[in-house]
Length: 449
Image (cartoon, rainbow, N blue to C red; front, top):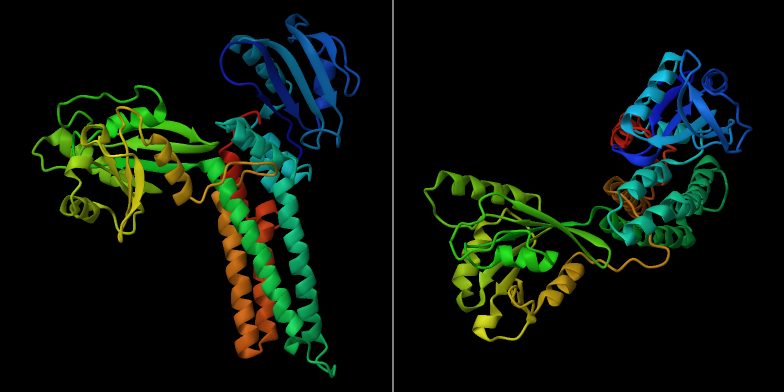
């Protein structure tokens, strides 16, 4: 990307609407405004005017806004034209700016420039996309908090504590002639323990932020005709899957997204597990096993009357290794059992009726419990898996450094581990981030954002 490029894109969603916005950013914006507009707007003042073609004829009429650098979203010269939201009209406006020398923006390039120019850190830039794509009110509020810097401030506070500790350790290494052995000071171990505690607290908050952003992936598995599709419909609150007494009705995977106290839950209903010579049904079971390998939790659905240990153990043996699972004993309206959650020596069971809805609330609470999810409250921010990985890397580095100090009295190794921990945390906000990672992050944005 060249900082001398001027970029243009439609900033509103595809389709027909009352208003459509074209955004332009780059050094050539003032010159483009003079050539394309009937009147030139004052900085940060809305002006109703016409946007003209090469012959001076009006392409559209709307609101023109000009934001001089550095006081703009990208930190560059920025122009926005709010015209009519027809795709043909917006395309003509974009082509007009392309002819004047601008180029089409890449996905996320406006946000990328805002990051490069110091208007946003990387976590805030990611929150722009999260806010746009949020699927619930809780996720939207969490993304807005991240955009406003709530998550970044927590990371910066931790980095400051880490820097202070690094300074102390490295100073003790640089001045070995001092009579006091700084590395033998018990306060240093206490400070390391305190730092570890702060990292773990941020890790727990970030875990909640990841659940708020990504949600969990639940796979419904089990024999045919045990009520998996009915359970999907009960959780979704609508008839998403076909329910029939005929075994093997579900061949392909049926997907539905729901929310539990703001947490997105991706529910996948899969083909019944049984011996079959049917080619299509066999393919459905292959896809079911593939889905289970990617699941955060598998719900093994069985009929309550037939839920014997042998059947359940046989189903568990078919699960991919180390896959978390819960046994759901369905059809308690037939067995006349009460809805409840049972803990056996090997697994947890939830007794419910997908047909009547009895016990569905217990299942929802169980899913929150196994994922350690807490309903989003004030101060809850969204986060991504890469953030959680970075914090885990920092936690491990601090733990290694503490071990080196306690067991080897190796101050140099402690200093190196603290440096690696700081590097991991800085990757969250973009103070230390590879170009490959930046490209991957911004490539997932919408064009015009």
